[in-house]
Length: 297
Image (tube, rainbow, N blue to C red; front, side):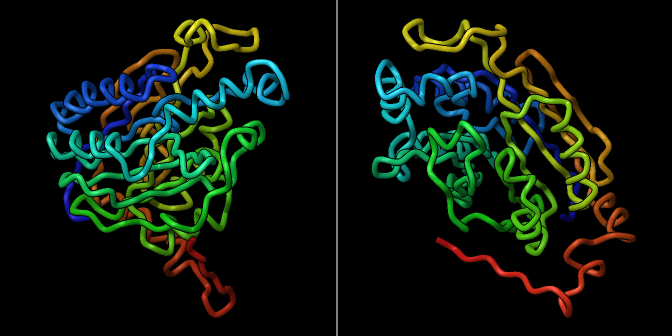
C-alpha cells in the first residue's frame, strides 16, 4: 500500500429474493460510492439475493410445508458463476472504475454456497471465495467451501482479501490472509451484535490491517408476503457496518438500523507504524517453530 486510498462500506438492503432487481440496486449505489471518492466498495454478506436469517431455521428443518419451495426459490435467484448476472456486476465495477466486493449466494450444481466476490476496475473477477464453514442454521442452506480465495491479492490500492462472517473467528483462515501480506481486510457479515465489534477490533489489531465490515440490513416487511418468517422484531438484520484502522480504532461507523454508505481514508503510514511492534506473519512469527499451509479446492 503506497498511497492514501478512500474506501466505502455500502450498508444496503437487497430486493429480497430478486436477483436482477438486487443487482439493479447495486448498480445504483456503486456510483454513489465512486462519486464519494471511493476506489473500493464492499457490500454485505449474501447481498445477492439476500441473507437467509436464523429466523428461517424452524421452517427449513421441515420435510413438508414451504421449506423446499423457499429453498428452491433462493436457489433459482442465486448467481451462477460464470454467468450473465456476474457479467452485470463486473460491468458495474468497470463502468465506475471500482474495486467492487460483493457477498452473494452461488448455485453450483444443486448446492448453494455463500461467496465473497471481488471484481477489479477492469471487470475481472479476481477473488471467488466460498465460505469454509456455514454457521449453525446456515448449514441448512449452504455447502462447505474450499481453500480458494484464502489469500490477499495485490492491487494498486494495496493487498486486498477477506473472509465471510464467522470465518473471521477461524484463526488459521485469518493467518492464511496474514501470510499473504493483507493490508485491506474485507469482513462482510450478518452478525449484527455488539460482540461482533469486539471481534473485528481484535482482528484489526491482530492483522495490523484496515478492516471493512459491511453488515446485513434487512426488514421483515421487505420480504415477499408468501415467504414465511418466524415471528419477531421488524429488523431481521440491523446492520452495524464499520471501517477500522490497524490499531482497532473506528474510522467510520458503526451504522445501525438504516441504509447508508460509510467512507474512510486509509493511510499507508498507519500500516507501517502499527507493524513496528507486531507483525503476525513477519517479525512476530516463528516459522522455525510453526508450519502452515493451505490446500486449494
